[in-house]
Every structure is written in C-alpha cells, then in structure tokens.
Length: 442
Image 1 (cartoon, rainbow, N blue to C red):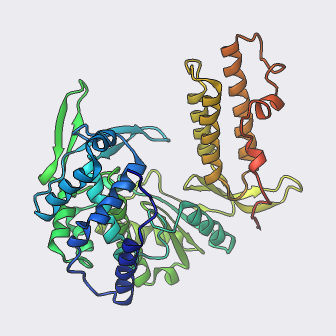
Image 2 (cartoon, rainbow, N blue to C red):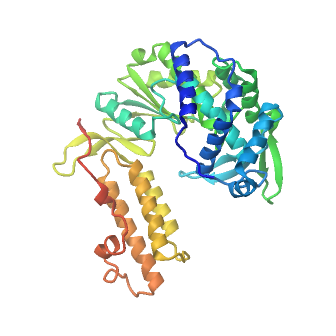
Image 3 (cartoon, rainbow, N blue to C red):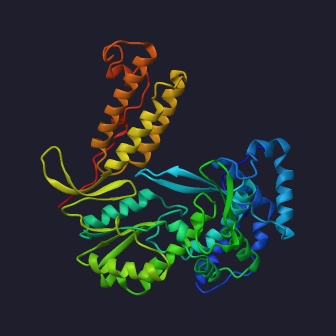
C-alpha cells in the first residue's frame, strides 16, 4: 500500500482551522476533538507517519511487515472500531536503555505500533491547537522549527551583547514531568473528556523492563504520578506543552526586561542569555522549576561569560573563536569537541575489522553518516571540525582497507588521500564547506 508522508489537504484544512481558532481566541477550550482522532483519513495518515519512522516492535512483537501481510486497511478498521467504541487501551511500553553520548544510559520507551498510530493521530489533531500557544523562544519538536534555528538565535544574541549566560540542564526532565500538572496544562485548551482520558491512559501505561537475568517485570502503571516515556509519539508534544509553562511565566512576569535577557529553549535543553544579570536569572529559574516539580542538575548548570569562555548548546560550542588568517578574536559558533568526538566514534564503529560488507555498501553507510552530520553542523565556523573529521575518516578508511586487502605497513601509497576521497568515493567534508563563517568582532 503506497503511502504519502505529505499531509493530505483535508487534514491540513482541519489543522489550519484549529490553529486559527486557537490563535484568535486564547481562552477558547475545545470540546469536540475525539471524533477527529477517530477519522479514517487521519488514522491512515498516522499509520504512514509511524511506518516512515520504522522502529522496533513493542511488547506484542507485531511488526509493520506482519500488519502489511495481513492487510493495513483491515488492521486500521479494527483499531478505529476500538477507538469509536471506547474499548481501546494502550499496551505496556517496552523500555530499553540506550547509551548517552556523555556516558551513562537513557531510558527509551517503545510503544506498540497500534499505540504509536493512535498517538500520531492525536498529535495531528492536538498539535495545531497548542502551536497557537507556544512561546517564540521554544524551538524543540515544533513544525517548521529546528535545532539549527535555535543555534542561529543563540549566536545572534551573543553577538548583540547578551553574553552573560545561564547554561542550564534539567535532571531527567521526561521522567519527572508531574502527570496532574501536565493534564491541567492540556485541559486549559482541551476539555473533550475522551481526549483527556486517552492522554491519561498513555501516561499511566505500565513499563515493561528486564532485570539483570533478562526476566521481564512491570513498572509504573496506574500508580505512577510523573513521567512521559521518551520514544512515545505524543511525548515530545506533551513535553513542550509543560515546558511552555516556564517560558510563558518568564514572559508574563517581565523577566526578559528585568534581567535584560532572552531564553532559547529546545525541549528540556535551554540557555538564558543576559546582559549582566545571569546570576539573578538562574536563582529565579531554580525557584520556578521547583514549583513546576522539576529540578536543575546543579553539576551541569553553570554561569558563563561568553566573551571569555565557551559554552555548549545543542552540539555547538559558542564563545570566543580566533580567526586563523589574522589571529583576531570573534564570537563564533562551531561544532563542539564532544560532537566531533561522537562522529569519530561512529566512524570507528562502522569501519571495524569484523565488517565484511562489500566496499560500496560500507562507503554508502559512511557517506550517509557524514552527510547527515555535516547537514546539521553546517552553520558557523565549521572548517576546523571538518578538517579533523576528514583526517580521521582518511586514517580509519586506510586502516580498514589495509586490513581487508592484507596490505603491509601504513598503506598510504596504495590508499592515498587522493584515492580515498577520489576513486574510492568517500565524501570529503571540506568539499561541502561553502561560504565564509558568520562572525562578529569582540
């Protein structure tokens, strides 16, 4: 069954109506939305979106391939019947632990495909309503906005003199969002009790985990009072709804004027950029987060002077940079050391001795990895980082091919720089470096 990821006109029209109504009437509460979530066209498009994201099966083990063998239309009709008859119940969320870039592990919740589809359908209907309310300083998980937009805004602000920085970090944000307060935030706009019940069911879904011996056990469920699983389709939207409480309170209490500051937020990752009042802004933020039931990670939260020291945000490093040609300093943005190290590690993981894939497949995976990385890190002063990555790529590709072809020594004659990035077709990041980096004199 061929499926387009482009939002169908009928759904887009509904979304526009919901957004315009919410924007025009900030106090309006929506009473009848559940029937929209149950619509055949919305469920079909929700399935297409879930299918495009692929992902592992949930606790029931059902895969997209199995659904498609049995027939997608019949499967969707069965799911719709459950929703219409109000007999739908989400299944437990399978929890897996994934390594964090800085060390440690992050829990990832994997709902079943049926639950992902219903969450995606709800998101299609609810997102336009809340988009009308979100603050301009919020960039994460929003249509038409990206991490790159947030990065450009941070760079623009430090270049305008907002160099006293609160580099903030929230402890386990997704795991600590209080259910009762989150549902109140949703209910300020949505009073359709069936929609609220649906969200509550997702928040209270049990978590299936495994102990050290690999045995399954259940956690959470109806007794849980906080957290929305990372990995759920609706979780990013719910997380932005709750974070918006902080951003809205900042605006309504005039903190921007009082602290001569701006907030730039990407989900739970945010910085406050001030002119001389970063300490006061941090104290105020700490108190407000406590009232919201959230906690700042004090070890990772700090005050920085961007004129003299760098701070990292969304994989970029902001602060003093030296112009190579004449040695003068400017306030720049560049891929952080951690971001460069992460891509080097991924390259190393791909080009291991045990990788027996044909070279065209290895090269294809390597080039996709490099294109994706350079696509995100395509802003600011990136040439030094690109050079470092190119050098690492050459060393690892040469070593990989020497092992594969049993070449003695370093192999730099047989696998020269020109051959690796020419005849063998490996992408050289410096070749995609276009235009001068934006900069501002200190």
